[in-house]
Image 1 (spheres, rainbow, N blue to C red):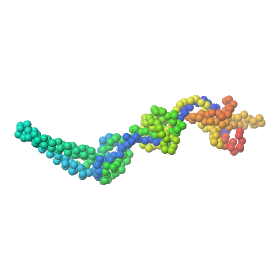
Image 2 (cartoon, helix red, strand yellow):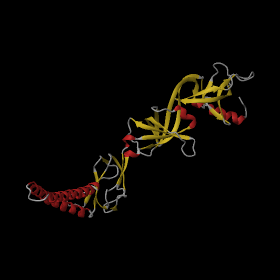
Image 3 (cartoon, rainbow, N blue to C red):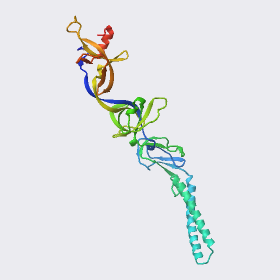
Length: 339
């Protein structure tokens, strides 16, 4: 007993917290992720960021050269000149009409031509605005990010030929991380909106994070009997990124129940047992200690203790093996003795 470090104790009443274990993944909502694409095709001229760079909404990440802009800008300049002349002509015809020196139709014709030119100019200005082009002569287009966040990848290099379907980069904003969990059907009634979930990273369980449930699924995921649960990560998000695997614990309620240390319970032939100190045999050596296996049903596990239900009666205050039960089981199975 000394060699194996055996310890004896008793069944205690412990306040244990009932929990649900679940696995899942960290995700970023689609509205917080963006592919950065040029608004018009061309050749990449400059790249001003690299993966890992933090960018703000509207910041220029790259520039693209598109010679096709020049004809539009030329038309715009020509229309501006024509509008200036048309404005003068319209004013002249208006003065002549008011002075009864020219018919009304001349003034109306000049006014219509002016409106037509202005409409054409507005159309070209809109085309240039949609692709981010300058109204002056320039074939360079800026490529801006629509959201703030961190550049997760860059998919082109200087000199690449891109079009409106070719992402230049991807930006992710981790400030609105979500926790997506899969909870089994039997545990679903215990999950509620607003409930706090504690989780750790599967590959780095040393630090605990918190999340709050905001959505509970209403259908099973594929062929599984699990339901998706969505929660918003709260507090410090340092070190958390999209796609990380997590292990989560959902705290349900606290209850006081008979419990013993986790190491006191052993599994033998598919059933759970504990060992208690048994009454010695009549002719036994006084130095000998006898043990007896007692079947139990396990309940909640928390803070190193497990709730148990005794499946057979034991003497009040019987000492329980709290450490070293595994060695007793090994000794018992070697000798074939139940005591």
